Length: 285
Image 1 (spheres, rainbow, N blue to C red):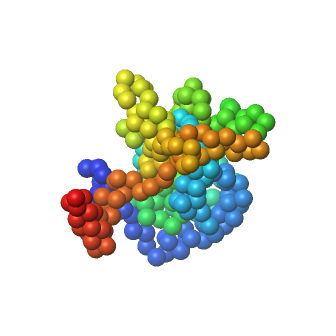
Image 2 (cartoon, rainbow, N blue to C red):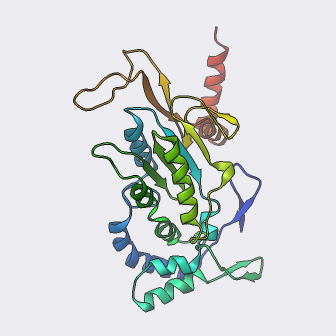
Image 3 (cartoon, one colour):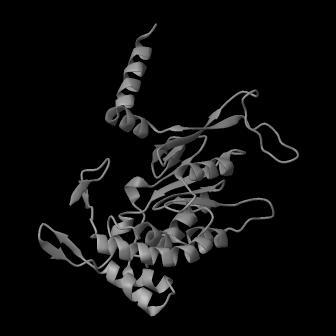
């Protein structure tokens, strides 16, 4: 069955695995997940036990609260549909019988309106194991940027926070951001993936910047939140942190993004009530 993709005209397939396939996927996942959970990068938050979108947002706040930064806000195009099977299987070291089961799950194919189609790439849509396989395929992005720009003493040159196929790269240096974007794009090629240009932007947390011939407004949206810094007076200013902390003249605010608020007000009963309240409030003198 096909479902509309939020915010776009295109549709994507939603697989409905049989009970037997779901059981096999869950069995393979239970065998692979403990090992990979011990190996996954600490800044990966999507579809992992004990981690949530709020943890990713909190990590971003901790990274930027003491200063202002450039940000690469990126999205990987059709991640779950395009992962290269050979690359994915090459990363997983397990008994041959288990790898055989995994390969069969990846190559199972899709039955759409009575027509069978092979699956030459991607992970099973709607499958129990798909999020784990996507995280395995994408694991290593943070290590890549950290190897390029390691910490200098207590100074962090670059941070990467990822939630499934959405990620941000944070640095004070615009050149570092651009180099990381190029390096990540190259790393994704053997995985069968690429960064989606129309959903990727480079911006600044505090100031508008001119980039690629257009003005990028400060702040960015991530996981339904808008993250931005605002100039403030000394009584509300954030601080640099450390023993000799000083005022930085701005403060980091995280709030629901306009897109998330619109979706909430349009699609839920409480959201409609909230929308009425906002409309009434705006009409008050």
